[in-house]
Length: 119
Image 1 (tube, one colour):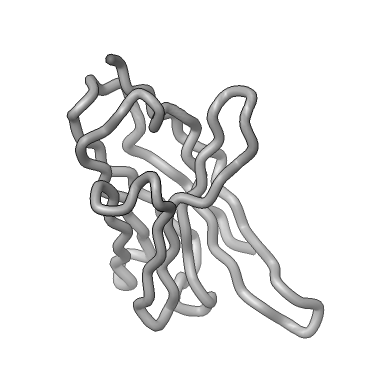
Image 2 (cartoon, one colour):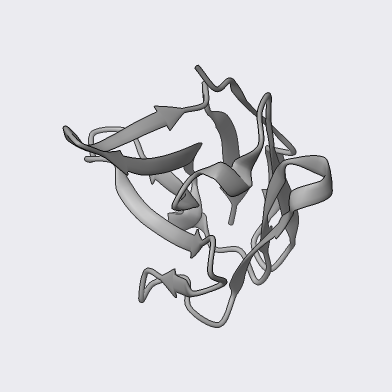
């Protein structure tokens, strides 16, 4: 079992920046990858960014060029650097790690951290 704890959320004005952190209780290198998702009120949870163990990244089109996902394996921590924030980025952000076994894909989730961007 892996515990994921997010931090770094808060209130920021449009155009500002925040850095989210996700600390894992175990080695993140043992999984296939990690990612960040977000869920705004009344909307479904959506993928924001992923980073595979091999170093490949992918981003939602709405955040590409503004957000950067990175990892520090020595600290078992994944980061999401968010720049040029917009009010529509307001959501609860969730950290995720995933892997595959004989049953298929499995996921672990953090508790979420609130990001609010004021206009």
